[in-house]
Image 1 (cartoon, rainbow, N blue to C red):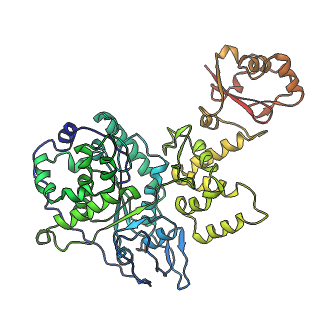
Image 2 (cartoon, one colour; image 1 turned 120 degrees about the vertical axis):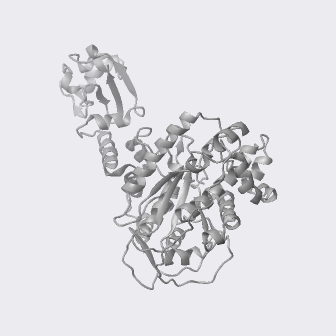
Image 3 (spheres, one colour; image 1 turned 135 degrees about the vertical axis):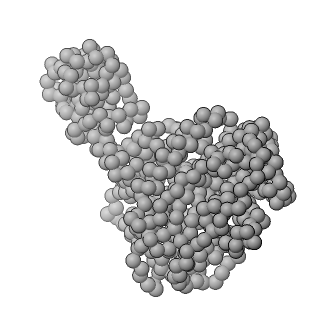
Length: 513
């Protein structure tokens, strides 16, 4: 699963996951896919589990995007299944696929697809965004997305890509994280769903693991797991070779995630699991469990299941995109403002911009190809594509209102800007811009000269007066022309904030107590 990890001991594994010895509810209905047939022209097949699959030459259109071919044109329709795998390949969103038959399956019927997110924090971050975007692509191509929150597996911890186990979180912390992540997932996926597209489902695997007994799990699931196969998983081998090793708790994680896939296939009709490239071992554990646990006599014919991984979100230097000196770039507006989110994306390097346009936006490929050509032309204006990338991704994550707030704040804080400010715009930069705090009685009724000296923007009153005479002082983006000007209550935005500026770039956010 595309998850973070929370490391816990065997005690928590037994007490949280497998609290009571109950039988696993195996009498669940089988997958019942609908049959909507389309055709696709294919090139030569390549080996199963291939890293990339070539030879797909048909034109596939999903909502808001087109995969270009010379053969035919289809009207984008998210209510009709389209070949989402071809779309993802062209955009660089496929690392590995368990079987190239996914192309035929996606064209023949509406598939249910899931991606998992473990609750290691109360929000998801930019690194998790690719998983959400892939779910959106499936939805735009007429397939049903399922976002699975690991309320159970988050108590165990995924060793994939981790050098050590994470600190244990309390049940209360994990539950709070589950609720926070649920809000993020629903907000993004539901807001961006095309009209007529299959609805999104947000599930929690604690719902089926919470009442499962330890002995039942070992008897009904564990006996089908071969230790040699589990040891051969790359995530396990890496941790075994490390100084810290790997606990039984984390070692068993792949079985839990594998059972998620099996359970969702039987109960919800899920046929596809997607995740980051570091999840390949966990995803194939699921396809193996489906094959071993499926009871054809009780459940009918076993459906074909698929796994698909996408590359991790890194820049051209191989560094994780979304982490900076200021910390993690969270997707929740409560943790990182839309303005700061927008500004981070605006800072994307030229060497990354086209690739990020492909994987982080839903712009048609023809438009992105033209952008790449424009970038190489003599008339290209620097940062034009960075601005577009920031707009598209901020709108997807924070909605149109969040984007407009980010743009308004950006415009307001430009050197020499005269944009009228409001509380939301100023609140967006709190923590990012230099700031100072003064009691209300040292602001209301006091001169701008005195206030600027008090917050140390200038060393003396005479220095402030010289700046005012030269037109270099602004309060809330309004130029100060009178050196005797005093601030009143109406100058304090929302009764608590004042933006002071000297020159074009030196700004300070004054918080009034």
